[in-house]
Length: 383
Image (cartoon, rainbow, N blue to C red):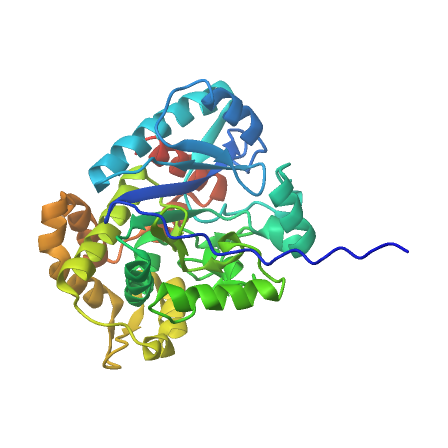
């Protein structure tokens, strides 16, 4: 008679590593398109082979489908350093893409690709996700920017996470670049996040301000067998204990590395304000308006309505962005991020984000492929 094997112990939450407070790391998921009709092109293997020969900061890795590629910076200490690293990687990407007669493009969605034509990249984790999530895996051919910010300790990370949650609509509206899906204008500024919400482990982190309590919650979750690690959570913001950071995941990939760096400067300046001024203590009740504010920002971008969680006041999101940028201006100045804040302030003042640029370009050209071509020119630093 065969003896039964003892059950495997549930995974343990990794200890929260030390990192430099307010340090930054940025990841960008990018589109690879052919230069014939500007549809997605499955060239990630070829790009990775060429990029591996070039000494660069950070890393370049595959993503879920083979028409995507992810670049990331190393640990940075300012948005200017982020920009320097992203620009260096961008320039190498452009050179490699030119050799393959393809182009790299920003934006949160490709405007007319057909999800069923995409190929899952051949990696064990991607194959497992494809088996679990079925067609959703191919529909996950969407492109986001993730910003990591260093936290001094685990409890500070949870406090930072829940404070940042009030500013999720600001991040969405300022980065929105996904108005088109499957050849149609969705009427959303960020349609990308609708795809993320289809996954069962999306949404927001549980409300706790102490790492010990969070570890207990994680242990309960892993005992169910539904999740095995923090990677299984697709939350808008999640702790990354192995890096000593929190990771903000709601940004669409911008059309330019300059805007990507500016958004990291916004995050860093907010984090400095939180750490140094302790402007408010987050509450579970903050999340009563969370989903509404998130939807407004996805749907209307910089023309959204924002409900202030503490007071319930309704005001234009653009006004709250302007107020926030004013509050954090001294911190931005001290961090060398004043230029980043100015770029975002001007954007909010005229309600102009990348989604608006894409719509205006398509209205002028009347051809989505030409819009993608011009977006590729913007990514490479032209136009």
